[in-house]
Length: 131
Image 1 (cartoon, helix red, strand yellow):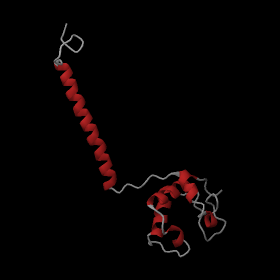
Image 2: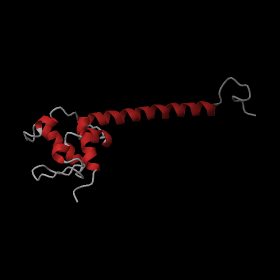
Image 3: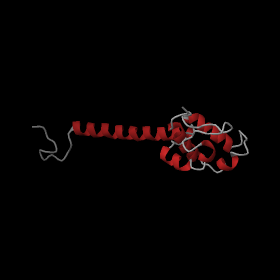
Image 4: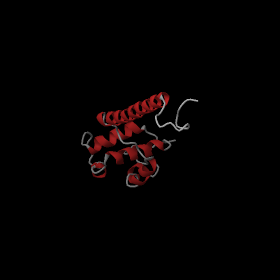
């Protein structure tokens, strides 16, 4: 019988020591991997993930012009329902940041955070487009 934890031996076997070493290395490399992913996301300026439910709540004010389900009844105001999420986020940010200038949009987007923009874009992208 080989000495080990069940035979009353205090010293761990070579196999147990090797296993502990492997686990330590795997654990450390896993932590480093997670850290690298987080650093990379921050470094590339990862956009926040949009939440449709939060976007639906935030879109209440948008409904006056863009319709309650993102389908505008006025040809001067675009329908937002079914547009691609990245496109919507880009356009909203451009209005907010003054890249696109539209006096009627500015007061509504001026104080939106990137998370607000992501939520609104996720919400409108999830809706069925104009029939």
